[in-house]
Image 1 (cartoon, rainbow, N blue to C red):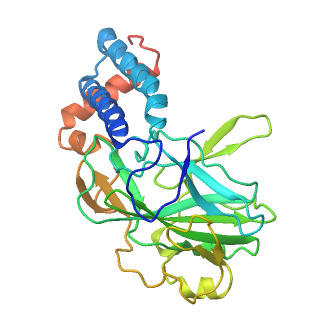
Image 2 (image 1 turned 90 degrees about the vertical axis):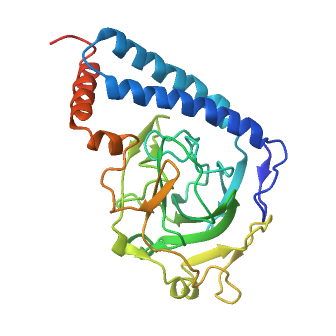
Image 3 (image 1 turned 90 degrees about the horizontal axis):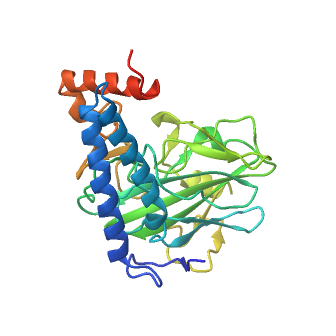
Amino acid sequence: MPQEYVNSTPGPVAGYSRDARDAAVAEYCREFRELQRLEREMVTDAEIVGNWRECMARLKAMEPAFLATLPRLKLSRCPYTGELVRGSVDIFGTGSPWWRDEGTVRNEFEGPPTLFAVDGALRLDGMPEESPFSVLPGPEKPFVITEILNRPEMRAVLQAMPIAGGTIWWMAYFAYPMVTDHARVNDYARDCYTILLDSGTRISYSDAYPDFLLNFDLAPWVKSGKLLWISPGDIAMKLHATSDGCPYLNLPGETRRQIIVGNWKGWLGELREPMDDSLVRKMDPEMEKRFQKGLAYVKEGGTNG
């Protein structure tokens, strides 16, 4: 089992190699760019559709090798049970498929039955890592979702985690008893969340909250006992329930949600439908026409109509 990582610096992680991660990401991105090329050229042509399917299969086969390069981290601790929330996270940069908003390549977060949702925010100190994906890492500072935390069953825990070139703030929500009649929120930097059924099957849902429900005034939530926090770099992951000494209050940063495309960073709302290659297609109506025609061809099973 991979070693766990909790540290105050995004430096070397025992048992993991930045070089190995970068090599896996570079291979994946090369193949993904080929997939984008095929999608742009896609028409009702059996050879191109066949190449597209082969490319998709190669990308899928690359996922285990990429995931093996990521450390398994302690993300939070449940205030009801004391159990930890863990997950493999790409702390080496934002240019990998772990950060891709559509078709994210990552393992599911692991936590106690009280874990309701895992959200987050990101502040980068410089330029994002370049990639062919669009990334939706949230605002630049931590927040809570009023609609969720107002529930009497709900409490949240905040923790900071350094990554290469920035900081992630994890906001994990816990419910006791578990809430089943309320919209969740998508897993951090992902376009969905999954639920494990009693049958062992995972199903995906998508829930997003409007910006006006993001509350960046954290002090009242800490004082009320609804929002707990963990000190940055605390290996013991000790929960604190007081505003005294809380390092997460009144932090600087944008409250608008970020979007990263390539190595460009902007704000969600400046662009619509931030799909991986939609920016290119929007500027070329003929390319969009060919793409939609080819996509319909694939969905129909590759039959000529």
